[in-house]
Image (cartoon, rainbow, N blue to C red; front, top):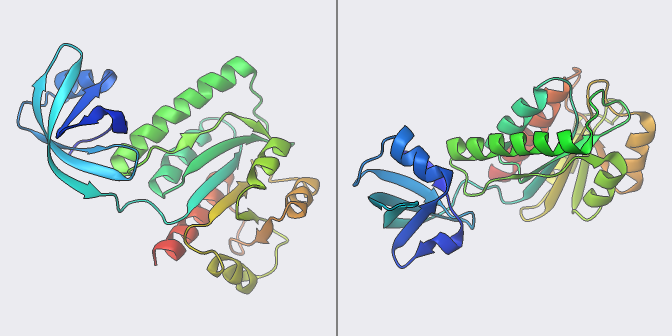
Length: 245
């Protein structure tokens, strides 16, 4: 069943009014006819099973058949602070992180980040990543479209994460798996969690120490060295299993 997102203001008296590019997608790409059913999420933990009622000049009118609570969101908001990787790896990271339940993705420029953007290119990249996040949220049946934040410096990212309840940073010199298990198991539903992932080459020692000074906990993801596009998804998978299990 097709899945679209609207804002709560588009839900009115038993009807949902779809606007913008989604109207063209429904009408001309998917060729959805009146009476066909689809799912709508309002981005506010509510979803609706609807049927196409009519197409107006600039909107599609949907009749609400059933209202359902959202059950696809994690009980904690997880923020992925991702060191900028080379090539198009960020697109894969965004897509899969959204599927795994991330709340927000923050691209971070670290000392070992090979990729450097000027302001104009950075804005365009973030717009592209946000489109990928939206598509992934639809595919995964999410009730919320995770935000891809503007590119931050490492210092900005650490200061931003300081406001969260738990900060995790996978690090090859972290203590063993038993200590990591204790850290993960101590995370409670409702807490906000930051995960810091370095780019190719990882973080410099000074960056790790800076995060630890702000309260981060160093964890291990196993005995093997993971690529940057694997490490964050591994950490998210572990947290998803912990929070949902």
